[in-house]
Image (cartoon, rainbow, N blue to C red; front, side):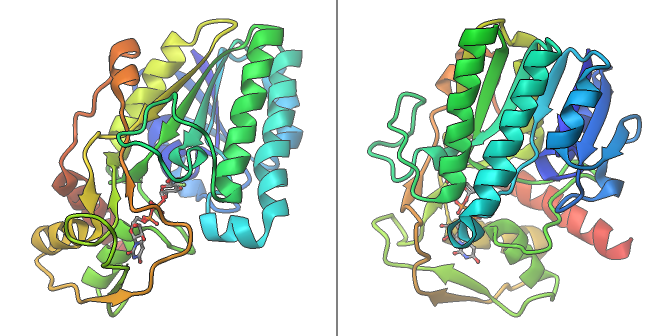
Length: 320
Ligand code: UFG
């Protein structure tokens, strides 16, 4: 297939684009490089730098079989301080992309959605039929796009799949997580291990969980990339399918730090800090629907494999 990957210079986008090239697809990446890196675009993919809202139309006029839409603003805290950046950057840009797909009869879309659309869960593991009540602007903007996609599927026959990621982690060779502003747990803990930070702050140890720290569902970025490939192949005209993607396994902040100590051999000092606003105690996915309908299951469910590949990636980027 000839595929357009938006945000293919970012973390999930670059790993997914790399796997798509390896699977024999022709890949064009469009990215404004606001948070992505040109050197993260896989060999064999063409990079077009610029505004996706403006470029989607001219690019898709060339005739594409599908779009993988990963480009997004994705910092929860920032989304609460500067909501316009998220309504414009995520919702308006995605609408322009959907219109360009309609105008050029591009048949398939795979969209990077998020567990943040659910907000505080009523039940765990979270299924796709759970209520969607996002507690932050980031999640609300992704939910708005999911709703827009559904209506474009119904009205214009678009075959779409939204993948709602839980906590993505790990790296795939030279493709990994490189955020200028890092807020995610595993990269922060590994920065402590590598001496770039003094200690990790544990946001609360009085949560209603076994060890008192928050529990999250970590999924290997390579497993996520595999789900994107399957979703692209199985998108069906006029349908919008939605899948949660996680391990179904929860790991606490304390367990993550301990695994990082074991993998890196570094002591990694940690200090308890106040709870972070908006954090739910436990977020664990049910990926049963993805397993049944996409035939997908995580091949790398071990936390140690996510931490090890992220650690190797951090070492490689420090040397470069
Ligand atoms: N945490 C710490 N210390 C840190 C960083 C994080 O204790 O320095 C804790 C958080 O409080 C949370 C856990 O580690 O309990 C994981 O935090 P992350 O920031 O790594 O990830 P989140 O669970 O907040 O967010 C992830 C994605 C978001 C997505 C959300 C969906 O990164 O994009 O899941 O719920 F919106």
